[in-house]
Image 1 (cartoon, rainbow, N blue to C red):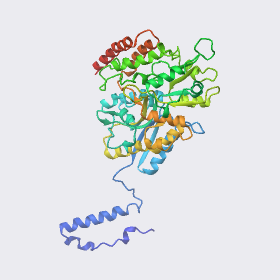
Image 2 (cartoon, one colour):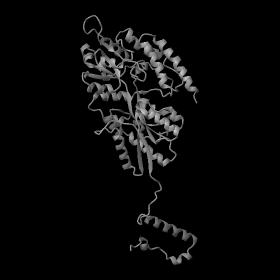
Image 3 (spheres, rainbow, N blue to C red):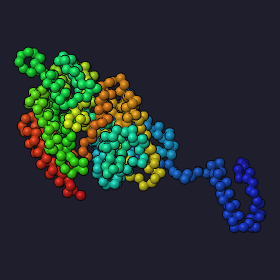
Length: 464
């Protein structure tokens, strides 16, 4: 028969003397006994109840890049395992979601009142959506985010509303100009130093890169070309050229019809109709056709086109595409600074009532968006980091084009976060296209866009 471990405990006074103890002595003795008993509970097989129980965290995440088996969630699963090893009281439950269904799932969660603890934001969304913030569903994270001074100012701006930060930026996208360097060399046009140029330098290059290749009296090669299509923003940095933006800072007024907006759009239309240095398809919605005119070896009819980073990989991996390519910023205008337009992806934390639980959740959010994690995403998924430290690790060290595009994206402005933005953007795109196709003047096009946008703004303001 096994001996109880309690038989070896010697108390400082005999039980027979308990009756002679004062009330204070009895209380003190009781506390000593309680402490000793609690200390021996694990020895006798009794469960030990912790003062802070374990935390279960629900993490939604969307697919990243595939591993050898085709698993597109392997990165998230590995990050969860690493985090749980460092936080033994935390258990993370991964709920896989698709990027295409993320917004619908969040809306359904809102209706049901059943939110995840952490959810991703699609990089194409441009940042947080104000609906969740204004409904009080998200945690402000100013006091929780790690080393926020390391994050791109534009990424922080995309996640800021009402002077508070509402998420953990992780990755960015942005547009840049791709250059056919063979055509630059053929025409003796200097490549912009460090990829930077003014509007006049850009305009001069486009003129020189426009020429009659066959000497038949017709122009076969043009300096520039781009398309207009709702949901795509390659042309938009040109609209920002002289300082105009689509909406006011408080998102209540249309501002692209300002003199600065008209001036910028006129620069682009003059490139087409005055300089005749832009391809006749410029302003159309022929996305594939315009890309082929730039990228196919047997075409090479356009020397400069704006694209996002996917085009760099496409040119390198597909047969029959040009390979001598450069990356440059959009030209600077009146303000003296180049502007790119893009989006910021990351994670948001939904409102938590328990401070300890919140601390574990924000620790996971910080781990998923640390410089090391962003470096891994950049290497694997070819997305641009939102942290300077991750860029400094040179995730694209073997690809100078991607590295240059990453630097441009690091300073890319996100689009306005107005809830009616998809409709607002379509109204603006339609009128900009009219101007680039020569159907309307820049002044008329942006004024007509303003009429449509102001109606959308007014209707949105009336909604509860």
